[in-house]
Length: 207
Image (cartoon, rainbow, N blue to C red; front, side, top):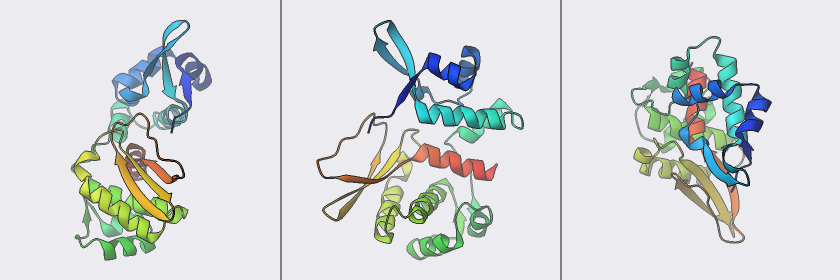
């Protein structure tokens, strides 16, 4: 599951930004450290980035920096939302979760109507994959259990949730800090989500 990379020079040209801007955003934690990938080339060591992720992030920064300071942007892109508490109705009102999916989630999860970041991420991922049609309800129940069981590890920036199928049997994996993942032949990857990106999507809806 390798990602397409873009060199630093190509990125600066394509995005129309300077070297100074790029590294200022890095220092402010607007761009994750792990996206700066050092690789050997015939000219020596060069820096590369995951192309889609970095271009999407730079586009977001450029769109939002007129209305938000760099510190406010850094807070939005940070995966730490430890003090967050939102009521169930507020999530539906803010269009983070649909009423129909919230009803299904509430039947599966017997918690109260207050959502901290762990439960918010669970219901958001559940919504995202159910509404896309990528997973069945049974697979949704499975991913919720995995997210609940490993809630303490999800604060890791590079966490990824993966759902696979083989011979009609589904599996759900949570990877942390994995550079690459390989599956046995005949395994179909049904869904693969970056949990950090899901948190950022949630934050963008809250801003």
